[in-house]
Image (cartoon, rainbow, N blue to C red):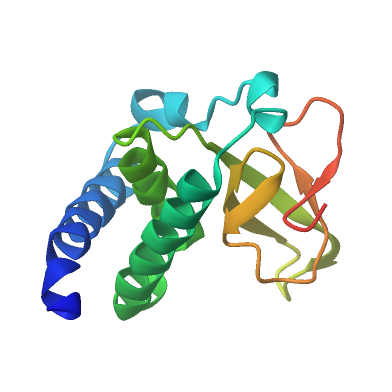
Length: 146
């Protein structure tokens, strides 16, 4: 029964991953960029243990399904999908985007990454040890593991 009970969340995650993929890949940035807006108040928000547990569970399901899509389903798409699922449950999160402070690829292009924060904790996409400079942070604080 446990696996079957999770099916609705997996279907919701699949829908949100497809929705985010279409928006990011096939629509103008101005049409979907509002989801990247972050309120400074979210960093200091208090969340219950139940909200944190549910957030981790949803993020793990989004991550698992997203990984099946390979490189086409990148970190930004996963972060947007999880953010929408959590918002539907009145859990406010913030999508963070940053560039790697110390590495460029062989073509001289900076490496970018997106992750999802719940308050001051990274709940999706924070499995890297690399420090990132946030695009949407006016103070230039490092992310993903700060």
